[in-house]
Amino acid sequence: MNIKLIVEYDGTNYHGWQIQPSGETIQAVLEKAVAAFLGQSTRVTAAGRTDAGVHALGQVVNFFCDREFDRHRIRRALNALTPGDIAIKEVERVPDSFDARRDGRSRVYEYRILNRAAPSPFYLTTALHVHDALDVDAMKGAIRFLEGEHDFSSFQAAGCDAVHAVRKVYRTSLDQRGELLVYTIEATAFLRHMVRNIVGTLLEVGRGQRSPSSFAELLEAKDRTKAGPTAPPHGLFLMEVKYE
Amino acid sequence: MNIKLIVEYDGTNYHGWQIQPSGETIQAVLEKAVAAFLGQSTRVTAAGRTDAGVHALGQVVNFFCDREFDRHRIRRALNALTPGDIAIKEVERVPDSFDARRDGRSRVYEYRILNRAAPSPFYLTTALHVHDALDVDAMKGAIRFLEGEHDFSSFQAAGCDAVHAVRKVYRTSLDQRGELLVYTIEATAFLRHMVRNIVGTLLEVGRGQRSPSSFAELLEAKDRTKAGPTAPPHGLFLMEVKYE
Image 1 (cartoon, rainbow over the protein chains, first blue to last red):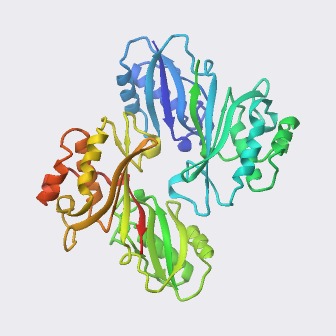
Image 2 (image 1 turned 180 degrees about the vertical axis):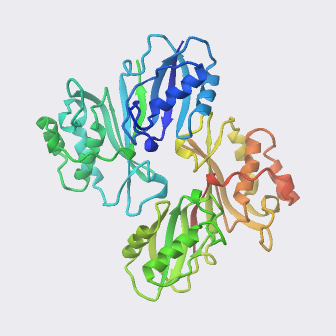
């Protein structure tokens, strides 16, 4: 049977999702837990390969096993076999054809910013602290240019192995949510560091160092050197992966 | 001059507010920072003496200094001199007669519960995880009996040195806020472990082990042995202290 998991993790202590030659990864910890439960080495596939320090509230993972299990039993067992910073939120049996990565139709990411003078003990590793007052209206003006299908070369990390940089953005918004300023973007798929590069550039707009309309020019330019710096990973969350 | 601070802290790594013979406390760390800034040993007074593991988003503190300082400079200096799990949110000059503890007219506490099957990596030390489904309506029925002036002996920890156990509860509510079930209580002052004993008993109502009206009987009984267990400290937050 093919098992789909919805997984939450605090990425602070991990070298990202994907198994690396050195350094602990979410994938490695999860594969160890699944292997301990099933009694055999098992590959798990994730919808999004998050970078080091990036978090997830809705990562989607699937794996195959050749016995039948109750889904609540799988959830309890995997939660018992993973450390506290990784949690299996939901377990569902899916058709054998389902592949968490290939079948994902869109991904939703959030980038969380704590915009106030004082730092907060409660967001040290889960939001970017920005103490300068930000011009939120200007930032909202800038992100409007991202909606729709564009070539995102200007926001693509060097070393990204994507065949082309055209991505379709379904929605993008910036909202105050309690103490946090939350940037949300939903797109078919993302280039390496794309959200963090957008946020790093957006913060320049918020600080008045760049105009909102410069976002339109950036998309035209297709030149990474013209955009702002990459925002740090710890404000970024993979929120949801949508399937047909 | 008399300086009032609003302080946030993550209480996880501290033996509570008050200076102890052994074990680090919030008060000790704050007094060290104030002494380093002023260049002389200085006592700080807090509105609420939170227990080990309890957090604060709105602890109020005051201290005296004999020189004049800009309040932004004090905030920046104290934030630089304290570790990341303690933050000085606001600094205000107040009349010399102001005393954070004595002048507090009411205190607002929150107790945060994550009520779902799976644990969460993001609330390991900042909410109580309850995996059983809770009857929130029954819990709301129970807390209504707490409003107004009552003798809270049934909810008072052994060893509490209060002269009497009568306290006035201004408001008490239970609300779903995003993923969290949040219990809020505002009262003139609190007995030792009072909020945690209320929550521990309230969880018994939520699990159907005790009726909502048993809360009325508990207030009548004035007997700690009749109430439920003390809920753990890590779900509790001192939110606000109100002054005239």
